[in-house]
Amino acid sequence: MMEPRSTSRGRLSRSAEFERVYRQGRATANRHLVLYTFPNPQAARPRLGLSVSRKVGGAVERNRVKRLLREAFASAESELSQGQDIVLVARPQARELAEREGLAGIDASLTELIGRAGLRVASAPAPVSTAPTTGAEEGL
Image 1 (spheres, helix red, strand yellow):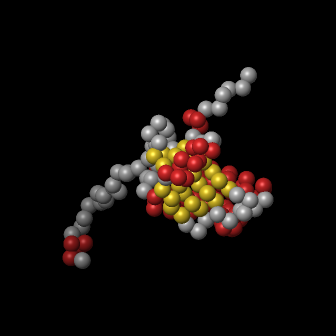
Image 2: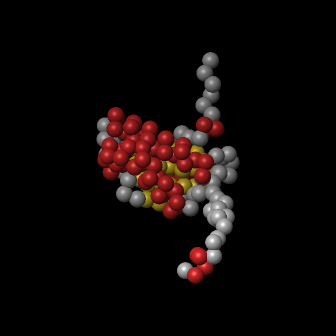
Image 3: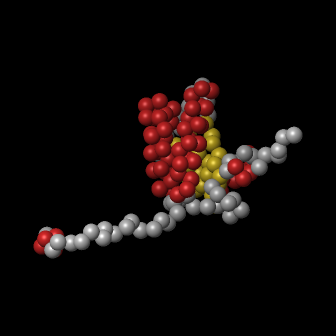
């Protein structure tokens, strides 16, 4: 017997969910991706929706771009604030980026957008160096 699909796996699946994020959310874009975000207090963790059109390429290319986007999102998810619905739209240049730089390129592009959209959890400040001073630094 098949289990009913659960929304706890962190994906947007219904077109109404996508529409709400598109219409009421905020968009941030770069050359390769468009990131739409909309707060969702009911979501225990950020939920991701992907949109990769045929302009990106054939089925093989689109599936590769989607796989890389999911992988990049999974690695960034721990830094994201909770309760967000996120839709990532791949632009045609995303395929060239995936071919040229692979996961590293997609990850860098997504990380840039996450930072610009302000989705990162406010992390603790960078640790201050506790190295003893010799006194020579004071004269600089």
